[in-house]
Length: 299
Image (cartoon, rainbow, N blue to C red):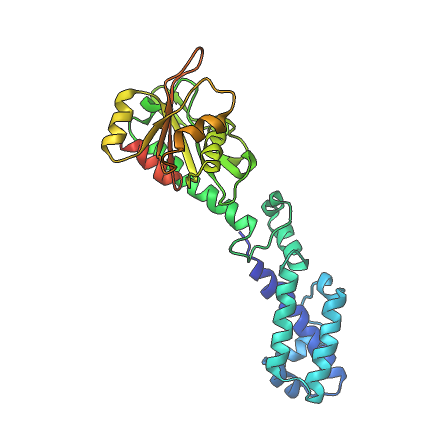
């Protein structure tokens, strides 16, 4: 695991410090003066100025870096720029290079896994796509572990299999919902999770979750289990709100909307099956862990 900050510390800072030391020395400043301006030792100035520090060619050749070195070097040398002003200008450049730019590109090269996000992200943005999707995956993994470790959970899995899903806050399609690839199946009495969660792999449960959200539900996660009137009664006794919908539908949004019309905060949606359709119960909650705990309460 490599942080973007490591790119800054290990590659950007040595490069730009050496460039500044070189620039200031060329302007006639002594090693002592350069050391004081840059806040480093004289021996470090000597190494920077004499090329004894490894530098990153991408930063060396970047016109923005070169222009800033020229501006800061000139300002520091003639006293028209304070050290604080110089620091601010350098910090601004760093943030610019971190945001879908050179530092983020180098970060992706150092950690190829980030390329799976298309390179179009700002790893420092707390509300950025990368952060949001990884939070969903992390939450889903915790929910999956809770389900997997629950003794007897396999008894709740319907014949078609279960899936545990969680969506991003602004989800508007199946690709915004993470789930278990291939579903969760009962294998010799144990809940079997075939693979790590991914986005866009659950059509059935994800569609139900999205339909509920489009009809007023605030749920971010859903889990399907087998239908049994006793299970539904137990959920009601535990304080969960339940609603039935028609299994033989042409329009999922319409039947889910009808079920949620009186109470969009329903936690449990179910249908009792139809011709060739297995009856199913859907548990809805704020996140995957909440939904997993709902299922565990039935064991």
